[in-house]
Image 1 (cartoon, helix red, strand yellow):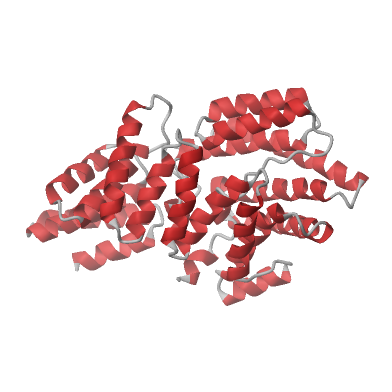
Image 2 (tube, rainbow, N blue to C red; image 1 turned 30 degrees about the vertical axis):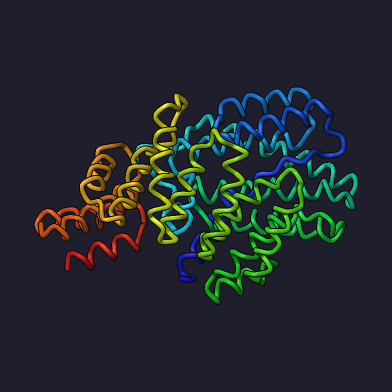
Length: 397
C-alpha cells in the first residue's frame, strides 16, 4: 500500500467511523429512545428528520451529552451530504478537500454544529470531573473529541488542526479500556487511530508515537472488528468503519459482507448500493458491480428525497466504468457522457473523462481521446486526485 497517501490526512479517514450513541447514566428513557430513532434516520440518509429528532431528545433531557453530540453528528453528515464528500472513494485516494466548487459549508449549520458539540463536551467533562472513574463519561468525552477531529479534517480541510482533538479522543478511549476492559465499543476509535498511525510515513509515525498514539495495523483492525461484534449501540458505526478499512486493505469479500449487513438494516440508504458496487469494481468484478449499479439507479429514480451533491454523476460514472470493463462500449459511453453532463465533483468528472478517453483510444479516435484525457488530468488536479491525473497524462503520451 502507498503509505504517502495515508500519511497526509491523519484524521480524514474517520469520516464515517465515529458515530456512537450510548447514553450516560443519567439520561432519561425518552431521550434514549429518541436518540435511537434519530440514529436510524441518520443511517437512512434522512438528515433533516434525524436532526429534528435529536432536538427533541435534547428537549427531553438537556443534560444528555449524547443527544447534543447526536445533533452535531447529524449536522456534520448533512454538511458532507450537501458538499458531496460522503463516500469511501473520498477517503481511499486522498481526494477529500475543503474547497469544493460552489459548495461552501452553510454558516448556520457550522455554527449550530459548534454549539452542539461544545455543549456535549462540556456535559461529558462535568461527568468526568465528578467521577473520574466513570468509564462511560470518559467514553462520551472521547467520542466528542473524535467527532471534532473528523469535522475539522473533512469539512475545514485541516488534518494538522485536527491532530490535538484526535489525540484527546484516543487518550480518553484508552482510559475507558483501562477502567473497563469489557468496553469493546471504545476500541472503535482506538483501533481506527492505530490503523491510521500504521499507514503514516516513518517520520510521521514517530510524531504520532511521541504525541501518545499507538500503532499496529492488524491490532487496529482487530479492535474495530471486536467493536462490530460487541453489540453496543455503535455496532453499525464499526461496520461502516470496517467497510472502509477492508477496502483499503483490499479485503474486498470482507468489506462486501459488512455492506450486505448494512443494506439489510438500512434499505433506504441508496449509497450503500453504490458502495457495494464500488467495492466490486475495486475487486475487479465489473459483472458483479453492474447489476447493483443498475438496481441502485432504479432506486434513485423513485426516491424523492434530496440527493448528495453530484450523486447521479457518480452513479453514471461508476456504471460507465463497469460497462467499459465488460466490453460494452456503446452503453458505457452513454453513461460516461451523461455523467459529464451532470453537476458533480471534479474528481468524478475527471475519472469519467479518463474512462471515455480510453474508449476513444480503443476506437482509434486519438484526437478526441487526447481532449478527454487532458480534461481528465486538469480536473483531477483540481480535486487532488493524483492517480487519475498521472494515468491520464501517461495515456496522452
